[in-house]
Image (cartoon, rainbow, N blue to C red; front, side, top):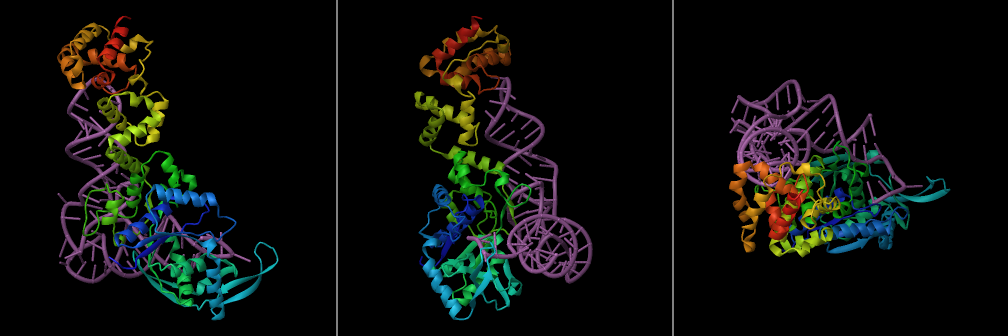
Length: 438
RNA sequence: GGCCCUAUCGUCUAACGGUUAGGACAUCGCCUUCUCAAGGCGGUAAUCCGGGUUCGAUUCCCGGUAGGGUCACCA
């Protein structure tokens, strides 16, 4: 499939990669890849004062984490001569002019380059919103460069999109009103007008533009919080687009990057802003956590709970299932471990308040029953089977609560059978004997 | 304020002009259960308002209202 679909993400390195920019990158990536095209990263660092290398590094780190691989990378600060050439061309053709004006920062007079506005109506067809018309008269003769070597945003964007053969400009709807200016410049340099698709913004819960005051907005914040890249990608795809729409409609919502490439549809992207819903992200993240191969999961859990490696494989997988049903992200696990949430699996609990055991009357019988379970088959199932009738006869709470409490020292924990299996027969009985002698 | 965009459950969203307005997250209830989770099952919950067009509007048109974006020698 050889066509000329080329898209780009053009962040300016004046802040960390924002979740909204990342979602725009995702849509650009998906659209390019599903059409066998190229996805390009262009660092828009023409503002020397505000651009910082650390932000560029953050952008690259975030895109890499999300697996949004770009085919080409450019930095506008390295292309100044190109802009200068085009600038000269526009000036020579009389479509822009030098203008001596008092600098806005009060630093004396400077000569800026203004675009000679033809004052006409511009209509473009937005792939998502249909025809949009602007009267450029309201724009005046806008400035396109501070001087011959310092192009401003609109000029640099148009020149680059032209030079880089960008076929589709997919960007946030905050750029809709920038489009007529850019079309005017494109016409002035004789460039093809790319196809535009303005996607809806990501909003904060109060429907305002999502910003730092609403908490974590940088992609790397989510990386650090222990979210999975696949979950993040899946979640962002669902913001403003739905697999439920279109001819290939499905109610399924779990799609990784490769699957999204196949089913994403730019035409069914929504046109209204979407609120960032953390609950759904968390749910999605757990879904992806469950999908992780055990080896990978153990590896990750070891970072926070090294003791898990001392367990046998089958016991590891039981503990994993216990852990996964209690966390949404790895940082949840980190917190649980910090608060001693899983200590009892590895260290006997210290029980000082024996009234917490409630009823100790059946402890000796419980021990006797557990001692009869075959040592080589001491599993949650065999333990449960051995104990069940006895517990039912005495009142399950009368038998099971003290057993569970003796094993864990916790008011809340997984059931005593599964805890017993992980601890093993010897340790289980030892813990029970200890409290039985109170 | 000018210009532009938008409007379906709390949230994300689906519905060739004809559907009991569907799904997911959240929430509530039930089941399971010694506890906490997880899981299973079920429920509550929406077409912003007013006019048209039409036999029939969530859907098409107009107006209103509301929200958002943008109006730099930032991007």
